[in-house]
Amino acid sequence: MNVIEKILSRASGEKEVVPGQIVDAKIDHAMINEITGYLVARYFHEAGAKKVWDPKKVTVVLDHTIPAPTAEAAEVHRIVRGFARDLNLPGFYDVGRGGVCHQVMVEKGNVKPGDVIVGADSHTVTYGGLGAFSTGIGSTEMTSVFITGKLWFKVPKIIRIDVNGKFGQYVGAKDLFLRVAREIGFSGATYMGLEFKGPTVKKLSVSSRLTLCNMTIEVGGKAGIVEPDEKTIEYVKSKTSEPFTPLYSDPDAEYARTLQVDVTGMPSQVACPNAVDNVKPVSELSGVELDQVYIGSCTNGRIEDLKIAADIIRGKKVNPRTRLVVVPASQEVFIDAMNEGLIQTFAEAGAAIATASCGACYGGHLGVLAAGETCLSTTNRNFIGRMGDPKAKVYLGSPAVAAASALTGRITDPETLR
Amino acid sequence: MKINSKALKFGDNINTDIIIPGKYLTITDEKEMGKHAMDGIDPKFAEKSRGGTVLVVGENFGSGSSREQAPIALKNADVKCVVAKSFARIFYRNAINIGLPVLECSDLWADVQDGDLLSVTLEEGTIKNSRSGKVFKAQPLPPFILEIIQSGGLLNQLKQKQTTKKNK
Ligand code: SF4
Image (spheres, rainbow over the protein chains, first blue to last red):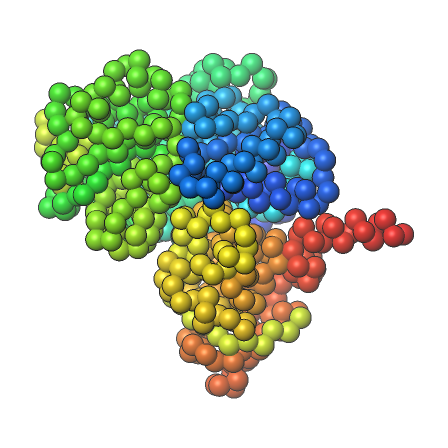
Protein backbone atom coordinates (compact mmCIF):
# COMPACT_ATOMS: atom_id res chain seq x y z
CA MET A 1 0.00 0.00 0.00
CA ASN A 2 1.06 3.62 -0.47
CA VAL A 3 1.14 6.01 2.48
CA ILE A 4 -2.40 7.38 1.92
CA GLU A 5 -3.86 3.87 1.68
CA LYS A 6 -2.06 2.96 4.90
CA ILE A 7 -3.40 6.00 6.73
CA LEU A 8 -6.97 5.37 5.59
CA SER A 9 -6.80 1.69 6.44
CA ARG A 10 -5.52 2.38 9.94
CA ALA A 11 -8.15 5.08 10.54
CA SER A 12 -10.98 2.82 9.40
CA GLY A 13 -9.76 -0.37 11.05
CA GLU A 14 -9.44 -2.17 7.72
CA LYS A 15 -6.46 -4.50 7.17
CA GLU A 16 -6.06 -3.38 3.62
CA VAL A 17 -7.77 -0.86 1.36
CA VAL A 18 -7.75 -0.40 -2.41
CA PRO A 19 -8.56 2.63 -4.58
CA GLY A 20 -12.30 3.08 -5.05
CA GLN A 21 -13.16 1.40 -1.75
CA ILE A 22 -15.38 3.41 0.60
CA VAL A 23 -14.15 3.55 4.17
CA ASP A 24 -15.57 5.06 7.32
CA ALA A 25 -12.59 6.74 8.96
CA LYS A 26 -11.99 8.14 12.42
CA ILE A 27 -11.02 11.80 12.27
CA ASP A 28 -7.97 12.95 14.25
CA HIS A 29 -8.69 16.66 13.89
CA ALA A 30 -11.29 18.92 12.28
CA MET A 31 -10.96 22.61 11.42
CA ILE A 32 -13.34 25.41 10.42
CA ASN A 33 -12.85 29.08 9.63
CA GLU A 34 -15.51 31.79 9.88
CA ILE A 35 -16.66 31.53 6.26
CA THR A 36 -17.49 27.84 6.49
CA GLY A 37 -17.89 27.86 10.26
CA TYR A 38 -20.96 30.06 10.58
CA LEU A 39 -22.84 27.49 8.51
CA VAL A 40 -21.53 24.72 10.77
CA ALA A 41 -22.73 26.72 13.79
CA ARG A 42 -26.17 27.11 12.20
CA TYR A 43 -26.47 23.45 11.17
CA PHE A 44 -25.13 22.21 14.52
CA HIS A 45 -27.95 24.01 16.33
CA GLU A 46 -30.54 22.98 13.73
CA ALA A 47 -29.51 19.35 14.22
CA GLY A 48 -30.15 19.80 17.93
CA ALA A 49 -26.58 18.81 18.82
CA LYS A 50 -25.19 19.89 22.17
CA LYS A 51 -21.62 18.58 22.22
CA VAL A 52 -18.65 18.21 19.91
CA TRP A 53 -17.36 14.62 19.77
CA ASP A 54 -14.02 15.72 21.25
CA PRO A 55 -13.50 19.45 21.93
CA LYS A 56 -9.69 19.06 21.90
CA LYS A 57 -9.85 17.77 18.34
CA VAL A 58 -11.52 20.74 16.72
CA THR A 59 -9.97 24.06 15.77
CA VAL A 60 -11.86 27.24 14.92
CA VAL A 61 -10.02 30.12 13.27
CA LEU A 62 -11.13 33.56 12.16
CA ASP A 63 -8.91 34.31 9.17
CA HIS A 64 -10.70 35.27 5.96
CA THR A 65 -12.05 38.67 6.92
CA ILE A 66 -10.05 39.92 9.89
CA PRO A 67 -10.28 42.40 11.47
CA ALA A 68 -13.86 42.69 10.22
CA PRO A 69 -14.03 45.14 7.27
CA THR A 70 -17.85 45.29 7.26
CA ALA A 71 -20.70 44.90 9.73
CA GLU A 72 -21.73 41.71 7.90
CA ALA A 73 -18.29 40.18 8.44
CA ALA A 74 -18.42 41.23 12.09
CA GLU A 75 -21.75 39.43 12.42
CA VAL A 76 -20.21 36.27 10.96
CA HIS A 77 -17.37 36.58 13.51
CA ARG A 78 -19.89 37.08 16.31
CA ILE A 79 -21.74 33.87 15.37
CA VAL A 80 -18.57 31.77 15.12
CA ARG A 81 -17.01 33.25 18.27
CA GLY A 82 -20.21 32.53 20.19
CA PHE A 83 -20.29 28.98 18.85
CA ALA A 84 -16.71 28.33 20.01
CA ARG A 85 -17.41 29.86 23.44
CA ASP A 86 -20.69 28.00 23.98
CA LEU A 87 -18.98 24.72 23.25
CA ASN A 88 -15.93 25.61 25.36
CA LEU A 89 -13.54 24.87 22.53
CA PRO A 90 -9.93 25.36 23.61
CA GLY A 91 -8.72 25.68 20.01
CA PHE A 92 -10.38 28.97 19.07
CA TYR A 93 -8.22 31.65 17.45
CA ASP A 94 -9.70 35.13 17.37
CA VAL A 95 -8.47 38.24 15.54
CA GLY A 96 -4.80 38.83 16.41
CA ARG A 97 -4.34 35.39 17.98
CA GLY A 98 -4.02 33.06 14.99
CA GLY A 99 -3.74 33.88 11.30
CA VAL A 100 -4.52 31.77 8.24
CA CYS A 101 -6.22 28.59 9.50
CA HIS A 102 -3.82 26.16 7.82
CA GLN A 103 -0.72 27.82 9.23
CA VAL A 104 -2.35 27.90 12.67
CA MET A 105 -3.12 24.16 12.40
CA VAL A 106 0.50 23.17 11.82
CA GLU A 107 1.97 25.69 14.28
CA LYS A 108 -0.27 24.58 17.12
CA GLY A 109 0.71 20.95 16.73
CA ASN A 110 -2.70 19.79 15.49
CA VAL A 111 -1.19 17.92 12.55
CA LYS A 112 0.84 14.75 13.06
CA PRO A 113 2.21 12.23 10.55
CA GLY A 114 -0.31 9.47 9.90
CA ASP A 115 -3.33 11.56 10.99
CA VAL A 116 -6.63 11.90 9.11
CA ILE A 117 -7.64 15.56 9.14
CA VAL A 118 -10.58 17.35 7.57
CA GLY A 119 -11.04 21.07 7.26
CA ALA A 120 -13.91 23.11 5.90
CA ASP A 121 -11.53 24.83 3.51
CA SER A 122 -10.15 23.45 0.27
CA HIS A 123 -6.50 24.12 1.17
CA THR A 124 -6.69 21.66 4.05
CA VAL A 125 -4.59 19.50 1.69
CA THR A 126 -1.61 21.52 3.01
CA TYR A 127 -1.04 19.15 5.96
CA GLY A 128 0.14 16.39 3.64
CA GLY A 129 3.47 18.23 3.96
CA LEU A 130 3.70 16.67 7.44
CA GLY A 131 2.75 13.17 6.28
CA ALA A 132 -0.95 13.38 7.20
CA PHE A 133 -3.96 12.60 4.98
CA SER A 134 -5.98 15.79 4.95
CA THR A 135 -8.71 17.10 2.71
CA GLY A 136 -11.35 19.82 2.41
CA ILE A 137 -15.05 19.22 3.03
CA GLY A 138 -18.18 21.36 3.13
CA SER A 139 -20.06 22.72 6.12
CA THR A 140 -22.81 20.10 6.22
CA GLU A 141 -20.35 17.22 6.34
CA MET A 142 -18.29 19.14 8.86
CA THR A 143 -21.33 19.40 11.11
CA SER A 144 -21.64 15.65 10.97
CA VAL A 145 -17.90 15.28 11.80
CA PHE A 146 -18.27 17.69 14.73
CA ILE A 147 -21.00 15.44 16.11
CA THR A 148 -19.64 11.97 15.26
CA GLY A 149 -15.87 12.29 14.77
CA LYS A 150 -16.12 10.17 11.64
CA LEU A 151 -16.48 10.58 7.89
CA TRP A 152 -16.63 8.34 4.82
CA PHE A 153 -13.99 8.57 2.10
CA LYS A 154 -13.46 6.90 -1.20
CA VAL A 155 -9.85 5.70 -1.24
CA PRO A 156 -8.22 7.78 -4.00
CA LYS A 157 -5.87 6.65 -6.73
CA ILE A 158 -2.46 8.23 -6.32
CA ILE A 159 -0.22 9.95 -8.84
CA ARG A 160 3.41 9.59 -7.82
CA ILE A 161 5.68 12.50 -8.60
CA ASP A 162 9.39 11.69 -8.51
CA VAL A 163 11.53 14.77 -8.23
CA ASN A 164 15.24 14.78 -8.97
CA GLY A 165 17.90 17.42 -9.49
CA LYS A 166 19.09 20.57 -7.78
CA PHE A 167 17.10 23.81 -7.55
CA GLY A 168 18.69 27.07 -8.64
CA GLN A 169 19.23 29.69 -5.91
CA TYR A 170 15.87 31.42 -6.41
CA VAL A 171 13.84 28.38 -7.46
CA GLY A 172 11.85 26.14 -5.12
CA ALA A 173 8.64 24.35 -4.15
CA LYS A 174 6.28 26.89 -5.77
CA ASP A 175 8.07 26.64 -9.10
CA LEU A 176 8.13 22.86 -8.86
CA PHE A 177 4.38 22.72 -8.28
CA LEU A 178 3.62 25.10 -11.15
CA ARG A 179 5.72 22.89 -13.44
CA VAL A 180 3.76 19.86 -12.28
CA ALA A 181 0.47 21.77 -12.77
CA ARG A 182 1.44 22.54 -16.36
CA GLU A 183 1.92 18.84 -16.92
CA ILE A 184 -1.12 17.49 -15.06
CA GLY A 185 -3.60 20.27 -15.92
CA PHE A 186 -5.99 22.06 -13.57
CA SER A 187 -8.40 19.14 -13.33
CA GLY A 188 -5.96 16.33 -14.09
CA ALA A 189 -5.91 14.97 -10.55
CA THR A 190 -9.64 15.23 -9.76
CA TYR A 191 -10.55 12.61 -7.12
CA MET A 192 -6.87 11.59 -6.93
CA GLY A 193 -4.00 12.09 -4.51
CA LEU A 194 -0.46 13.26 -5.26
CA GLU A 195 2.56 11.78 -3.51
CA PHE A 196 5.78 13.75 -3.89
CA LYS A 197 8.91 11.60 -3.65
CA GLY A 198 12.56 11.53 -4.53
CA PRO A 199 15.83 13.07 -3.33
CA THR A 200 14.84 16.65 -4.17
CA VAL A 201 11.68 16.41 -2.05
CA LYS A 202 13.71 14.93 0.84
CA LYS A 203 15.91 18.02 0.76
CA LEU A 204 12.95 20.41 0.96
CA SER A 205 12.22 22.13 4.28
CA VAL A 206 8.95 21.46 6.11
CA SER A 207 7.74 24.88 5.00
CA SER A 208 8.40 24.07 1.33
CA ARG A 209 6.65 20.72 1.63
CA LEU A 210 3.60 22.52 2.98
CA THR A 211 3.70 24.83 -0.05
CA LEU A 212 3.87 21.85 -2.38
CA CYS A 213 0.92 20.00 -0.82
CA ASN A 214 -1.10 23.22 -0.40
CA MET A 215 -1.36 23.59 -4.17
CA THR A 216 -2.53 20.03 -4.92
CA ILE A 217 -6.21 21.09 -4.82
CA GLU A 218 -5.42 23.40 -7.76
CA VAL A 219 -5.13 20.37 -10.04
CA GLY A 220 -8.29 18.90 -8.51
CA GLY A 221 -6.40 16.73 -6.01
CA LYS A 222 -8.12 15.25 -2.99
CA ALA A 223 -4.86 15.18 -1.05
CA GLY A 224 -1.14 15.74 -1.43
CA ILE A 225 1.48 14.02 0.68
CA VAL A 226 5.19 13.85 1.40
CA GLU A 227 6.27 10.84 3.45
CA PRO A 228 7.49 11.90 6.88
CA ASP A 229 11.21 11.84 7.73
CA GLU A 230 13.52 13.18 10.46
CA LYS A 231 12.70 16.77 9.52
CA THR A 232 8.95 16.14 9.82
CA ILE A 233 9.30 14.36 13.13
CA GLU A 234 11.57 17.03 14.58
CA TYR A 235 9.12 19.75 13.52
CA VAL A 236 6.05 18.00 14.91
CA LYS A 237 7.79 17.16 18.19
CA SER A 238 8.66 20.82 18.62
CA LYS A 239 4.93 21.64 18.41
CA THR A 240 3.20 18.89 20.37
CA SER A 241 3.91 16.26 22.99
CA GLU A 242 1.07 14.03 21.74
CA PRO A 243 2.34 10.62 20.60
CA PHE A 244 2.11 9.57 16.94
CA THR A 245 3.14 6.70 14.68
CA PRO A 246 4.15 7.81 11.18
CA LEU A 247 3.23 5.68 8.17
CA TYR A 248 5.21 5.17 4.95
CA SER A 249 4.59 3.79 1.47
CA ASP A 250 5.65 0.20 0.86
CA PRO A 251 8.48 -0.15 -1.67
CA ASP A 252 6.09 -2.05 -3.98
CA ALA A 253 3.15 0.35 -3.48
CA GLU A 254 0.93 0.87 -6.50
CA TYR A 255 0.31 4.17 -8.23
CA ALA A 256 -2.08 5.20 -10.99
CA ARG A 257 0.71 6.99 -12.76
CA THR A 258 4.27 8.20 -12.14
CA LEU A 259 5.58 11.53 -13.28
CA GLN A 260 9.32 12.29 -13.43
CA VAL A 261 10.50 15.84 -12.90
CA ASP A 262 14.09 17.06 -12.98
CA VAL A 263 14.50 20.55 -11.55
CA THR A 264 18.15 21.06 -12.53
CA GLY A 265 18.37 24.23 -14.59
CA MET A 266 14.62 24.91 -14.25
CA PRO A 267 13.96 28.68 -14.20
CA SER A 268 11.34 30.28 -11.93
CA GLN A 269 7.81 29.50 -13.14
CA VAL A 270 4.77 31.78 -13.32
CA ALA A 271 1.11 30.84 -13.83
CA CYS A 272 -0.61 33.33 -16.13
CA PRO A 273 -4.25 34.44 -15.98
CA ASN A 274 -6.68 32.76 -15.47
CA ALA A 275 -5.55 29.22 -14.79
CA VAL A 276 -2.95 27.56 -12.61
CA ASP A 277 -1.75 25.36 -15.48
CA ASN A 278 -1.16 28.29 -17.84
CA VAL A 279 2.49 28.24 -16.79
CA LYS A 280 5.47 29.91 -18.44
CA PRO A 281 9.10 30.42 -17.47
CA VAL A 282 9.48 33.85 -15.87
CA SER A 283 11.75 35.16 -18.63
CA GLU A 284 8.91 34.96 -21.18
CA LEU A 285 6.83 37.38 -19.09
CA SER A 286 9.41 40.02 -18.29
CA GLY A 287 7.48 42.74 -20.09
CA VAL A 288 4.32 42.45 -17.97
CA GLU A 289 3.80 45.63 -15.94
CA LEU A 290 2.37 45.26 -12.44
CA ASP A 291 0.02 47.44 -10.41
CA GLN A 292 0.44 45.28 -7.32
CA VAL A 293 2.64 42.56 -5.88
CA TYR A 294 1.19 40.43 -3.10
CA ILE A 295 3.25 38.25 -0.73
CA GLY A 296 1.29 36.08 1.67
CA SER A 297 -1.29 33.27 2.07
CA CYS A 298 -1.24 29.66 3.24
CA THR A 299 0.89 28.90 0.18
CA ASN A 300 3.77 31.35 0.62
CA GLY A 301 3.29 33.51 3.71
CA ARG A 302 5.61 31.62 6.08
CA ILE A 303 8.84 32.91 7.58
CA GLU A 304 10.95 31.06 4.98
CA ASP A 305 9.03 32.89 2.23
CA LEU A 306 9.30 36.30 3.87
CA LYS A 307 13.07 35.81 4.35
CA ILE A 308 13.58 34.99 0.68
CA ALA A 309 11.64 38.11 -0.30
CA ALA A 310 13.31 40.38 2.26
CA ASP A 311 16.79 39.28 1.17
CA ILE A 312 16.03 40.50 -2.34
CA ILE A 313 14.37 43.73 -1.22
CA ARG A 314 16.71 44.78 1.62
CA GLY A 315 18.04 48.30 1.18
CA LYS A 316 16.02 48.90 -1.99
CA LYS A 317 12.68 50.54 -2.78
CA VAL A 318 9.47 49.22 -4.27
CA ASN A 319 9.17 50.61 -7.82
CA PRO A 320 6.95 53.73 -7.86
CA ARG A 321 4.82 52.18 -10.62
CA THR A 322 3.65 49.37 -8.35
CA ARG A 323 2.70 48.66 -4.73
CA LEU A 324 3.75 45.78 -2.51
CA VAL A 325 1.42 44.19 0.05
CA VAL A 326 2.93 41.76 2.56
CA VAL A 327 0.67 39.61 4.72
CA PRO A 328 2.32 37.15 7.15
CA ALA A 329 0.46 33.84 7.29
CA SER A 330 0.16 33.86 11.07
CA GLN A 331 0.71 35.93 14.18
CA GLU A 332 3.70 33.70 14.98
CA VAL A 333 5.18 34.36 11.54
CA PHE A 334 4.54 38.09 12.07
CA ILE A 335 6.42 38.08 15.38
CA ASP A 336 9.33 36.05 13.94
CA ALA A 337 9.48 38.41 10.97
CA MET A 338 9.62 41.33 13.35
CA ASN A 339 12.40 39.76 15.43
CA GLU A 340 14.41 39.07 12.31
CA GLY A 341 14.01 42.61 11.02
CA LEU A 342 12.03 41.54 7.96
CA ILE A 343 9.05 43.74 8.73
CA GLN A 344 11.42 46.71 8.96
CA THR A 345 12.96 45.78 5.60
CA PHE A 346 9.56 45.64 3.92
CA ALA A 347 8.31 48.83 5.57
CA GLU A 348 11.44 50.80 4.62
CA ALA A 349 11.11 49.59 1.04
CA GLY A 350 7.62 51.10 0.91
CA ALA A 351 5.50 47.98 1.38
CA ALA A 352 2.10 47.89 3.05
CA ILE A 353 2.13 45.24 5.78
CA ALA A 354 -1.18 43.80 6.90
CA THR A 355 -2.24 41.75 9.89
CA ALA A 356 -1.81 37.96 9.70
CA SER A 357 -4.82 36.77 7.70
CA CYS A 358 -6.05 35.63 4.28
CA GLY A 359 -5.96 39.27 3.22
CA ALA A 360 -6.65 39.81 -0.47
CA CYS A 361 -5.92 36.20 -1.45
CA TYR A 362 -9.59 35.47 -2.07
CA GLY A 363 -10.63 39.05 -2.83
CA GLY A 364 -11.98 39.91 0.61
CA HIS A 365 -10.00 42.98 1.64
CA LEU A 366 -6.47 44.33 2.27
CA GLY A 367 -5.42 44.77 -1.34
CA VAL A 368 -8.20 43.77 -3.75
CA LEU A 369 -7.75 44.72 -7.40
CA ALA A 370 -9.62 47.15 -9.65
CA ALA A 371 -10.80 46.36 -13.19
CA GLY A 372 -7.86 46.28 -15.57
CA GLU A 373 -5.21 46.00 -12.86
CA THR A 374 -2.48 43.38 -12.90
CA CYS A 375 -1.01 41.67 -9.85
CA LEU A 376 1.73 39.13 -9.27
CA SER A 377 0.83 37.10 -6.21
CA THR A 378 2.40 34.30 -4.17
CA THR A 379 -1.07 32.83 -3.54
CA ASN A 380 -2.52 29.72 -5.15
CA ARG A 381 -5.46 30.75 -7.36
CA ASN A 382 -5.74 33.10 -10.29
CA PHE A 383 -9.36 32.41 -11.23
CA ILE A 384 -11.29 35.27 -12.83
CA GLY A 385 -12.30 37.66 -10.04
CA ARG A 386 -10.39 35.80 -7.33
CA MET A 387 -8.56 38.87 -6.02
CA GLY A 388 -11.16 41.49 -6.82
CA ASP A 389 -12.69 42.74 -10.05
CA PRO A 390 -13.32 40.09 -12.74
CA LYS A 391 -11.34 42.26 -15.16
CA ALA A 392 -8.20 42.19 -13.00
CA LYS A 393 -5.36 39.85 -13.98
CA VAL A 394 -3.45 37.69 -11.50
CA TYR A 395 -0.11 35.98 -12.12
CA LEU A 396 1.09 33.40 -9.58
CA GLY A 397 4.74 33.04 -8.64
CA SER A 398 7.23 32.41 -5.87
CA PRO A 399 8.24 34.89 -3.14
CA ALA A 400 11.54 35.43 -4.96
CA VAL A 401 9.81 36.38 -8.21
CA ALA A 402 7.38 38.56 -6.26
CA ALA A 403 10.17 40.44 -4.50
CA ALA A 404 12.19 40.98 -7.67
CA SER A 405 9.05 42.13 -9.50
CA ALA A 406 8.16 44.60 -6.75
CA LEU A 407 11.55 46.29 -7.27
CA THR A 408 11.16 46.70 -11.04
CA GLY A 409 7.40 47.11 -11.35
CA ARG A 410 7.17 44.33 -13.92
CA ILE A 411 7.46 40.55 -13.81
CA THR A 412 11.13 39.88 -13.17
CA ASP A 413 13.41 36.87 -12.87
CA PRO A 414 15.29 37.31 -9.57
CA GLU A 415 18.37 35.89 -11.30
CA THR A 416 18.62 39.05 -13.39
CA LEU A 417 18.95 41.27 -10.31
CA ARG A 418 22.04 39.56 -8.96
CA MET B 1 -38.16 12.70 -8.68
CA LYS B 2 -39.00 14.67 -11.84
CA ILE B 3 -37.72 18.12 -12.72
CA ASN B 4 -39.17 20.12 -15.62
CA SER B 5 -37.40 23.41 -16.15
CA LYS B 6 -35.77 25.61 -18.71
CA ALA B 7 -32.08 25.23 -19.42
CA LEU B 8 -29.37 27.80 -18.86
CA LYS B 9 -26.03 26.86 -20.34
CA PHE B 10 -22.41 27.71 -19.44
CA GLY B 11 -18.99 26.33 -20.44
CA ASP B 12 -16.09 24.54 -18.76
CA ASN B 13 -14.32 25.29 -15.50
CA ILE B 14 -16.95 27.36 -13.77
CA ASN B 15 -15.24 27.61 -10.38
CA THR B 16 -16.64 28.50 -6.97
CA ASP B 17 -15.32 32.08 -7.20
CA ILE B 18 -17.55 32.52 -10.26
CA ILE B 19 -20.55 30.79 -8.68
CA ILE B 20 -20.37 32.99 -5.59
CA PRO B 21 -17.52 35.55 -5.50
CA GLY B 22 -15.59 36.00 -2.24
CA LYS B 23 -17.11 39.40 -1.49
CA TYR B 24 -20.54 37.82 -0.91
CA LEU B 25 -19.36 35.15 1.50
CA THR B 26 -20.27 37.10 4.60
CA ILE B 27 -23.94 37.28 3.57
CA THR B 28 -25.74 35.09 6.09
CA ASP B 29 -29.20 35.16 4.45
CA GLU B 30 -29.50 32.33 1.94
CA LYS B 31 -32.19 34.01 -0.19
CA GLU B 32 -30.01 37.10 -0.44
CA MET B 33 -27.05 34.94 -1.42
CA GLY B 34 -29.13 33.42 -4.22
CA LYS B 35 -29.36 36.88 -5.80
CA HIS B 36 -25.61 36.78 -6.42
CA ALA B 37 -25.36 33.28 -7.88
CA MET B 38 -23.06 33.08 -10.93
CA ASP B 39 -22.29 36.75 -10.43
CA GLY B 40 -18.72 36.12 -11.62
CA ILE B 41 -19.94 35.28 -15.14
CA ASP B 42 -23.48 36.68 -15.49
CA PRO B 43 -24.72 39.31 -13.02
CA LYS B 44 -28.27 38.84 -14.42
CA PHE B 45 -28.26 35.10 -13.69
CA ALA B 46 -30.62 35.17 -10.70
CA GLU B 47 -33.22 37.06 -12.73
CA LYS B 48 -32.97 34.68 -15.69
CA SER B 49 -33.03 31.65 -13.44
CA ARG B 50 -36.25 32.64 -11.66
CA GLY B 51 -39.05 30.12 -12.05
CA GLY B 52 -36.72 27.15 -12.10
CA THR B 53 -33.61 26.22 -14.07
CA VAL B 54 -31.63 23.18 -15.06
CA LEU B 55 -28.06 24.39 -15.22
CA VAL B 56 -26.18 22.70 -18.08
CA VAL B 57 -22.41 23.09 -17.79
CA GLY B 58 -19.13 21.69 -19.12
CA GLU B 59 -16.14 20.06 -17.48
CA ASN B 60 -14.90 20.55 -13.93
CA PHE B 61 -17.88 22.48 -12.58
CA GLY B 62 -17.39 23.87 -9.06
CA SER B 63 -13.61 23.63 -8.83
CA GLY B 64 -11.78 25.64 -6.20
CA SER B 65 -13.03 26.43 -2.76
CA SER B 66 -14.93 24.22 -0.32
CA ARG B 67 -17.52 26.97 0.24
CA GLU B 68 -20.92 25.33 0.58
CA GLN B 69 -22.27 28.77 -0.28
CA ALA B 70 -21.73 27.81 -3.95
CA PRO B 71 -24.47 25.14 -4.18
CA ILE B 72 -26.56 27.08 -1.63
CA ALA B 73 -26.50 30.18 -3.85
CA LEU B 74 -27.52 28.13 -6.90
CA LYS B 75 -30.34 26.42 -5.01
CA ASN B 76 -31.63 29.77 -3.79
CA ALA B 77 -31.44 31.15 -7.32
CA ASP B 78 -34.05 28.53 -8.27
CA VAL B 79 -31.61 26.06 -9.84
CA LYS B 80 -33.36 22.69 -9.61
CA CYS B 81 -30.57 20.50 -10.97
CA VAL B 82 -27.04 20.82 -12.37
CA VAL B 83 -26.02 18.61 -15.29
CA ALA B 84 -22.28 18.81 -15.93
CA LYS B 85 -19.83 16.97 -18.13
CA SER B 86 -17.87 16.57 -14.89
CA PHE B 87 -17.74 18.03 -11.38
CA ALA B 88 -14.96 18.97 -8.97
CA ARG B 89 -14.94 16.72 -5.92
CA ILE B 90 -15.86 19.02 -3.03
CA PHE B 91 -18.64 20.80 -4.95
CA TYR B 92 -20.21 17.45 -5.88
CA ARG B 93 -20.35 16.30 -2.25
CA ASN B 94 -21.55 19.70 -1.03
CA ALA B 95 -24.37 19.88 -3.59
CA ILE B 96 -25.73 16.50 -2.54
CA ASN B 97 -25.38 17.36 1.12
CA ILE B 98 -27.51 20.49 0.77
CA GLY B 99 -30.03 18.70 -1.45
CA LEU B 100 -29.18 20.09 -4.90
CA PRO B 101 -29.41 17.30 -7.51
CA VAL B 102 -26.28 16.86 -9.63
CA LEU B 103 -25.88 14.62 -12.67
CA GLU B 104 -22.87 13.83 -14.83
CA CYS B 105 -23.63 13.57 -18.55
CA SER B 106 -21.14 14.35 -21.30
CA ASP B 107 -23.50 14.37 -24.32
CA LEU B 108 -26.30 16.70 -23.24
CA TRP B 109 -24.26 19.89 -23.38
CA ALA B 110 -23.83 20.04 -27.17
CA ASP B 111 -27.57 19.54 -27.75
CA VAL B 112 -28.81 22.26 -25.39
CA GLN B 113 -29.54 25.94 -26.02
CA ASP B 114 -30.52 28.52 -23.42
CA GLY B 115 -34.25 28.29 -22.79
CA ASP B 116 -34.77 24.69 -23.94
CA LEU B 117 -37.29 22.83 -21.80
CA LEU B 118 -35.61 19.87 -20.09
CA SER B 119 -37.26 17.01 -18.21
CA VAL B 120 -34.98 15.24 -15.76
CA THR B 121 -35.86 11.97 -14.04
CA LEU B 122 -33.38 11.54 -11.23
CA GLU B 123 -34.10 7.87 -10.44
CA GLU B 124 -33.25 6.86 -13.99
CA GLY B 125 -30.71 9.56 -14.70
CA THR B 126 -32.48 10.57 -17.92
CA ILE B 127 -32.74 14.05 -19.38
CA LYS B 128 -35.13 14.83 -22.23
CA ASN B 129 -34.78 17.95 -24.37
CA SER B 130 -38.25 18.76 -25.71
CA ARG B 131 -36.92 21.03 -28.46
CA SER B 132 -34.69 18.39 -30.05
CA GLY B 133 -36.78 15.46 -28.81
CA LYS B 134 -33.58 13.69 -27.78
CA VAL B 135 -33.17 11.76 -24.53
CA PHE B 136 -29.82 11.62 -22.77
CA LYS B 137 -28.62 9.18 -20.16
CA ALA B 138 -26.56 10.23 -17.14
CA GLN B 139 -25.11 7.96 -14.49
CA PRO B 140 -28.12 7.53 -12.14
CA LEU B 141 -27.50 8.52 -8.51
CA PRO B 142 -27.09 5.60 -6.10
CA PRO B 143 -30.11 5.08 -3.77
CA PHE B 144 -28.43 6.45 -0.61
CA ILE B 145 -27.62 9.71 -2.40
CA LEU B 146 -31.12 9.96 -3.89
CA GLU B 147 -32.48 9.59 -0.38
CA ILE B 148 -30.39 12.53 0.85
CA ILE B 149 -31.66 14.67 -2.05
CA GLN B 150 -35.28 13.65 -1.53
CA SER B 151 -34.99 14.61 2.15
CA GLY B 152 -33.75 18.05 1.08
CA GLY B 153 -30.17 17.45 2.22
CA LEU B 154 -28.12 15.53 4.76
CA LEU B 155 -29.15 17.72 7.67
CA ASN B 156 -32.88 17.37 6.97
CA GLN B 157 -32.39 13.65 6.62
CA LEU B 158 -30.70 13.52 10.03
CA LYS B 159 -33.56 15.53 11.55
CA GLN B 160 -36.24 13.36 9.91
CA LYS B 161 -34.52 10.22 11.17
CA GLN B 162 -34.48 11.65 14.69
CA THR B 163 -38.22 12.47 14.58
CA THR B 164 -39.14 9.02 13.27
CA LYS B 165 -37.08 7.53 16.08
CA LYS B 166 -38.94 9.67 18.64
CA ASN B 167 -42.35 8.83 17.20
CA LYS B 168 -41.74 5.09 17.30
S1 SF4 C 1 -4.80 32.27 2.45
FE1 SF4 C 1 -6.08 32.18 0.60
S2 SF4 C 1 -6.08 30.05 -0.03
FE2 SF4 C 1 -5.28 30.12 2.06
S3 SF4 C 1 -7.06 29.73 3.35
FE3 SF4 C 1 -6.89 31.95 3.13
S4 SF4 C 1 -8.17 32.49 1.35
FE4 SF4 C 1 -7.83 30.28 1.31
